Figure 1: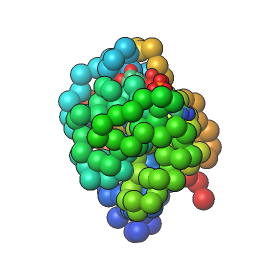
Figure 2: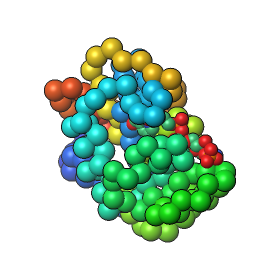
Figure 3: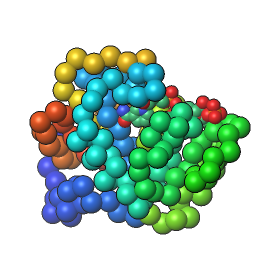
Length: 171
Ligand SMILES: NC(=O)c1ccc[n+]([C@@H]2O[C@H](COP(=O)([O-])OP(=O)(O)OC[C@H]3O[C@@H](n4cnc5c(N)ncnc54)[C@H](OP(=O)(O)O)[C@@H]3O)[C@@H](O)[C@H]2O)c1
């Protein structure tokens, strides 16, 4: 694990900078992120961590995920959809449009899934804030593979039902 300097320690204690672009998500030990219209586990404290992290920040997510989770959190939200119109969120027809509109708000941007949005978001991200849920869970959608050589865990915390890791890009 990378050793943090003082500034990085400050940054990593789950504080977020306005120019951070953070992929946030939870996955099983086998990489599953979802099953049908939800997640294959019931770990409310991990979901609360997500809700708390994105509060008053900016979120980009796919239309399916917004249908499932959109009512639960309070953030400026950009939803990717080819056709939908959604009250209470800004709909974008491409990831590039979503990220460029999100940047104009000058707040931390969270990229919050699902799978294809994570895939589009990882190349743009500065941080990956990923929870690994303890236990044997399987689903029908998985977190995309990412090149772990480009990333390093700078901070992690072993919580009762999940491990939270803060990954940063290797400089
Ligand atoms: N564990 C976690 O942290 C986590 C987080 C989020 C979601 N999930 C899980 O993931 C699953 C949902 O994810 P998903 O991957 O199936 O769906 P999703 O990514 O949430 O949404 C897919 C939709 O996003 C739109 N979209 C995707 N790429 C686009 C693009 N390039 N341009 C414009 N629109 C685009 C399309 O909407 P239209 O069909 O409207 O065109 C597409 O059908 C659920 O099981 C959910 O529980 C888990």
